[in-house]
Amino acid sequence: MKYDHNDIIEKATTLFWRRGFHAAGMRDIQQALDMRPGSIYARFQSKEGLFKLVIEQYAQNSAERLKQVAKAESPLNALYSFFETALTGPDEQRYMRQCLLVKSIAELELIGDIAKKAVLESMQTLKAGFRNIIEACIEKGELPKHTPTSTAAEWLQNQFVGLRAFALLQDDNQTTIQMIDKVIIDLKGQWPQKTH
Amino acid sequence: MKYDHNDIIEKATTLFWRRGFHAAGMRDIQQALDMRPGSIYARFQSKEGLFKLVIEQYAQNSAERLKQVAKAESPLNALYSFFETALTGPDEQRYMRQCLLVKSIAELELIGDIAKKAVLESMQTLKAGFRNIIEACIEKGELPKHTPTSTAAEWLQNQFVGLRAFALLQDDNQTTIQMIDKVIIDLKGQWPQKTH
DNA sequence: TGTTTACTTGAACGATCGTTCAAGCGATAA
DNA sequence: TTATCGCTTGAACGATCGTTCAAGTAAACA
Image (tube, rainbow over all chains, first blue to last red; front, side, top):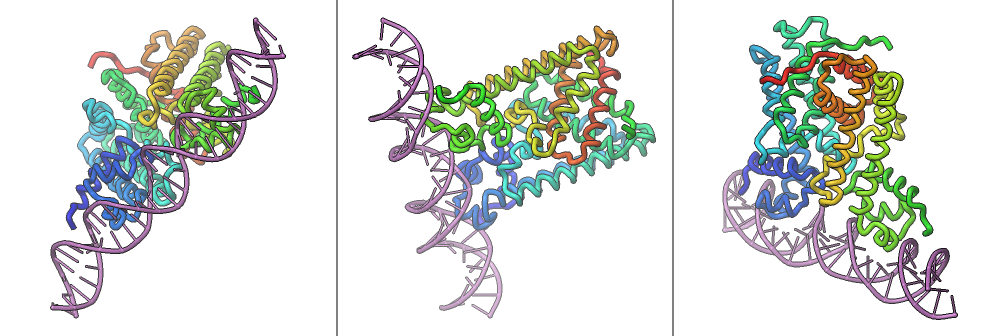
């Protein structure tokens, strides 16, 4: 066991995050991990197998961070910080602004069924995380009691997805922060009626 | 001139929209267009050259549709319809829910510089289109006069981006429509102050 | 009429893709 | 000691990638 497992996953995550599943070639992976093809295949079966582990690890980390937000004294403030951190990192980490899951969804049809399933399930996990945050906000009195939990959670995840795609192109952090402010305002705002 | 130009672009658009730039191989393109490689290269120089034309055509169409929205008697209602049409098409046109431009942004680094430029410029064009809609709404009294035009335009485009990524995964149109309702509510709602 | 030009054909090119495999290594168990 | 097992190596595989090119066709112009 020459190479540490967590170390491998971490390096692979960086590569997939930067380049995407398809564009990250096996030779890129070999170089990034400093491993030979045989080693990679003996451990992970395939490029897709490695990617699956990367996605699962990424989702687990993200879910953990969302859980921290929900546990915070002021979940609403913690949510704000979470958005700000994710969306306004330094320029050399610009690739991180794009959510790895969202990036993967864009190339969902090029990915094998196994990793595809991992991506979609991870999205569900994060959705549950957002829902917990909404509920925590209501409990702490930071959001009105009548806030439609499920709709708001879906909406919040949606905002996150949109902002991450947008922040990737945005040079001006000030604009991004205004968008985050708007999210918080709208989160407290009105919600559509179900009847239609 | 055996093949009609517009016909070629239209077929190529469908293919790139479905598969993305990278995943759409030259042999897929040859089959979709019923053309041999030499013909394609004589006309479009490269795969990227064809893609560039597709993007420009797509952006032009989209800009035209946004212009129609701005010209409508009730731009706000027209905006609603525009969102609804784009996000809740029939299942066999599900690929269309994802904005071709947004999809292309996800693989921006795999695309050559020429097409990359076309994608980014097209995003600017659409942003201007959204801005015109905001202004039309204000003029018609459908939005308050103090609405920050530029911020709102960026926000609106952002919502569109997010919703299109989201609707791709969403099975339930009812949920999508609720999200659109929420967009309209928030559009009329409060906006963040610039001071920070 | 011959020349030019834009377009078309389809075989073929070199490069790169994900993957395989025989061989070797080092730790553990019998 | 010997056998087994997970991991490692690196050359090599077949498939596919975007692209080229010599040759041919048809319309436009001289």
